[in-house]
Length: 277
Length: 229
Image 1 (spheres, rainbow over the protein chains, first blue to last red):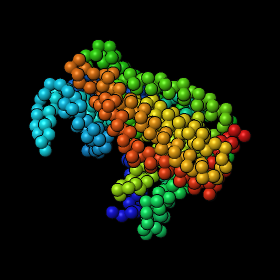
Image 2: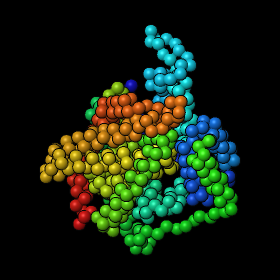
Image 3: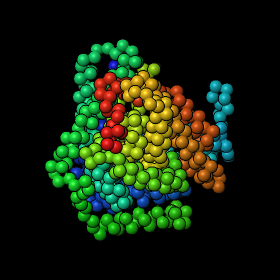
Image 4: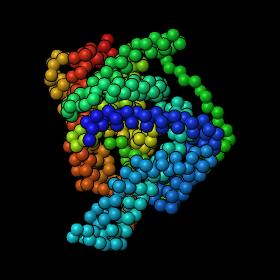
């Protein structure tokens, strides 16, 4: 295994981040059901549905919300294969892997469903274990799908501004907005640095050497970042910054936004109030 | 370490949001008092920096890689209150825009990484480094120990949250609704990997970055003095 692998994996992580961002932006710019919603309402709708999924004790209800996610994806011009890949790979599959031991009576004692032996070890899958694993996996999958829908159908900077409806302090909203822009600036710095290292470093002699390269990069990024703050502050002043941040409002609500929100709230009230779904 | 949606029940998620609200409020007030106007962009820059630290793959034994959280490093560089906001912002951006960590778990994730890890790491660093010179080796060791200990403390609180779920939320027939493992499984599993692997990654990154800055630009380790000036 190449000792330069960490350089390659860092470059791949950066490239993957940029690719995901470009794709998300392309989907957010399309015309579709969720793209047409006011970002503030969309955030509230998704958050309400997330709470409904979180509170629900009924697997059929959670699966229905997952079905709704797929319908929303289709109605929002999102390629369904892309959506499935984006929502299944990593977190739900990782959760499925985590949930597997919970199937067995060692972790979930209860009513036996299936028993078998592996390498002389007797294993029993219990009803409680199976249901716990299914609940866990389906809930994570549905929640991840809701979050991905939100991120794919909303321009990222608009989504961050929409946080104001939760009465998030202005310092947070301004920091979020600026942070988002800096991430893209810094990601370019990181990518260029790693490409430069890759083209100059033929062989990383030891773990210590590799770790030194990474730490040097992080420290150098902070040095550059720190220098940048003075330039940014001067730029802010030249644009009229008076120590009190102001954000422009670009939101447009419609009657459909209210209808969607009312439906989401109704679902949550039913789940919470009656605990039947 | 990033808890996704669905791992924690509504009670834990709600309590963690409630716990973080006064901390965020106090952090916003403290930062407004201590940060001078010129350093307003510093918070955003630090948040972006915290976000990106997690993209640096660090080589670890066995030919594989891991990444640091960088919360302790942020606390050493800009102070615990500003780091609390910066790491929270990074976690919110990750959850909302990139699906890393859940939206309903933002409170819990911020409690573990932007509060426990940041403050524990900062004060461990302060206690161990004492009044030593800014370029002393003691500060490098302090940064390493703070990174290792604080990450493991954060892993412990995360594990406790996971382990409480079967106790708090179960159906009448005994099915777990959220994380299915109790404290007896969650704590050893989470602490095991953090004590053996990720804690060391955090320690190495925190210590080496402090060492690098001591050599290249030691005034960056005294940002706090500058901020308060």
